[in-house]
Image 1 (cartoon, rainbow, N blue to C red):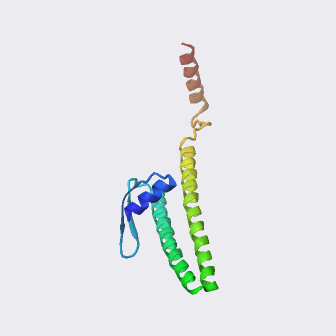
Image 2: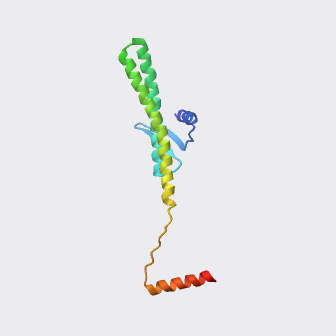
Length: 140
């Protein structure tokens, strides 16, 4: 299963941060390199989108065989809907990359905020002493 994800990573030119992907009975367990919640959620969503895309492709192959054998218009309609659904899911995968980038940029902007205004709490005499000391130290 990991090879499928690696192939998909290469095809989409995405660098993988997943150490191990292993199927479980209820879902897919992932072990990311980073323990950051955002990164973990990103990896989990990414793996789920990959899984949905693969299952959708398998379903498309199956319904196309049925449509070819039976010639039913309904089978072709379902195939068209599945194709659209898989295409939408692949778009969501690319949107996920953009969203992660936006979140990372927001985090760096927040951490780079500089305090422009400082508040002094004290008496005016203490403030004047500090100002005089500052002016004397700057002149020397």
